[in-house]
Length: 322
Ligand code: SAM
Ligand code: SF4
Image (tube, rainbow, N blue to C red; front, top):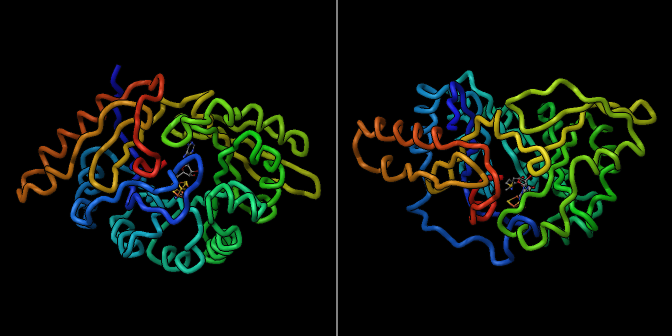
């Protein structure tokens, strides 16, 4: 069964590079360097986005990576995408460079920000990210709040023996600041394959952990969302929403309208399996009519979307954009 989609969303990986080396995501040596020439230029990205908007009902773009804030000119790219109008424009970041960029990105027209935050303990954060500064990420979150982003979501990948003990603290930190915590199940992909069985924690277990301090009530399911959302209430009038992304225990393939575009122009229909399609070769044909070939390629990728089964993809997560 292929999925037929009237509307799609796009995860746009603008760079494979990252200054951090989160243990479940990035190998110590980083990803193999790609030549500058192979990375899609802004005008090529905009051409793909325009095509997806005009022919495939694209309604949301999420800038990701690697670390998207490392791509030079990211604010200009955001401005160009935002100027297309009628499209949600979001970004997922590790927050290390956000304190300087939150305000310019907001002014450029970015509508939403998710910040990855796996620990509130500075030493554990540094250890897990292999060198990241918790202080800088928190400064980035504060800058995003000051710039008026709302809701800001905090993404936490929960790992046994690492940060499961912190989920209540992270939820409290988020709710005190009007942020929305979201707890992600580890996916057996890239670097995480080696310790997936050992460190995986189900959303159900995180939910039980949170119930020690909070009351949770499920909200109606949005079939196009990867996240299940709950209202959450704690002592001292703490309240808000919490999300769970249960990629393993409750895959959401049936509602998935996501496409991914890698920084070098491969269009991917599924994070777990299947081949991608190289759009760069059409983008660089030097042929104004290549739009037809591009559209055919998108059709093929969409038609090949299936409920995913096992993770068989061997790519590293920073190449896929999370
Ligand atoms: N560098 C940015 C960041 O960390 O937010 C954006 C890219 S990162 C690949 C996007 C998201 O993927 C992050 O929230 C990260 O925690 C998540 N991620 C990476 N590897 C993962 C894995 N094996 N399982 C689940 N989530 C993963
Ligand atoms: Fe970098 Fe994000 Fe991967 Fe961490 S999760 S290594 S911050 S790309």
